[in-house]
Length: 130
Image 1 (tube, helix red, strand yellow):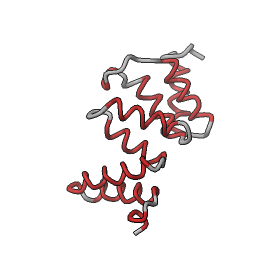
Image 2: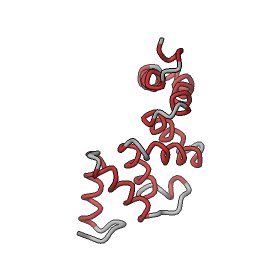
Image 3: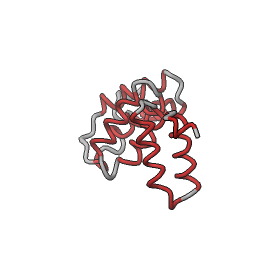
Image 4: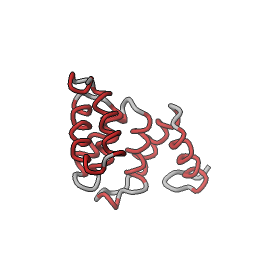
């Protein structure tokens, strides 16, 4: 198995399979996401970070921030956490930081970020209404 050989994408996709198909294997899924994230695989950092938001917010945010540097979906999620769900995760809302990351993801073609940014601009939520 490629995951046993340290292949980060294999760890990530094995974790996705375990997480979705086998509820009892959630701990094994987290182990694989940890391995892939340690290897710098951004989709795994996003998956692991999103799962750690409630149990370990500082670690989750660090993973999301690192993944956001090279993975537009992570940039959107990192921005979203700072914009819409900051209080749920013990953060002060930071609209400037949030919109910077969301806009970056949108400019790189992330459809969720494009939609969210358009809605924020239309409503003036965290940005000057446009």
